[in-house]
Length: 273
Image 1 (tube, rainbow, N blue to C red):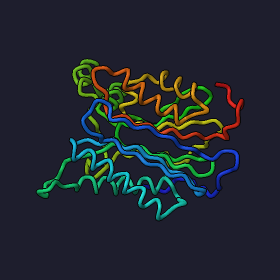
Image 2 (image 1 turned 60 degrees about the vertical axis):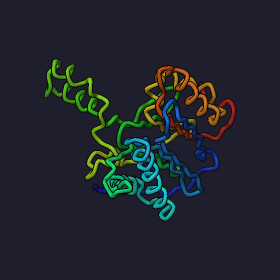
Image 3 (image 1 turned 90 degrees about the horizontal axis):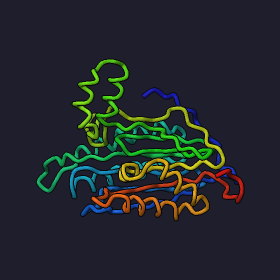
Image 4 (image 1 turned 135 degrees about the vertical axis):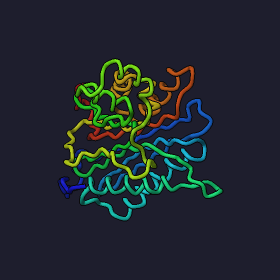
């Protein structure tokens, strides 16, 4: 990976220090394969959500191991001088560790996990994504997706747009669209999405990290409305998001995890929501 990121050295201002809130539910599944973690310090903040795959033992271990890998190294190295380089390196490292997970008999588990993470230092954010979990930034009452879904549907869409696949072929293949084309544990990980130039945040931004259980159950307009209606209580907003996802999926709800990062001063009347 070429070093193209900007080194950020500013400390938090008194006005905008990120504050993080999370909610995670089992849904109607028998076991929890989502893992998440976040840490806030004067030197920066890091949040991450991972959605494991591979059954009870595999998925749970994969997502937990990916989180453990990144946060152990972060605690050793913070504050980060080059966030993009760190996140890229950690994704590769986590991929290797998850790929080599074995069962009690020493056989490879074949487990995997998605990964989305966001690091904020000063008023800049750097993110990483592998798989189909998502990162949104809410600004000026609009919700923006900043990462792609790394799945077969996304690949087919790109091929259809550039004319390398026919509409007929697209329709026959898109039924397998949810199959992931990149995930932690795939081995020799190639597709890692990182914004190498940090993105500048402004007062009032809200960053959303979530597993697919959220956005497959709720429309983006619903997610935005819940966050907007609870913008002075994001802890409550996170809980309402997961509860609503469960309520809107009577036939079965996946594990669902959401982390909200409030980049604001918390001053009443400051935002036009």
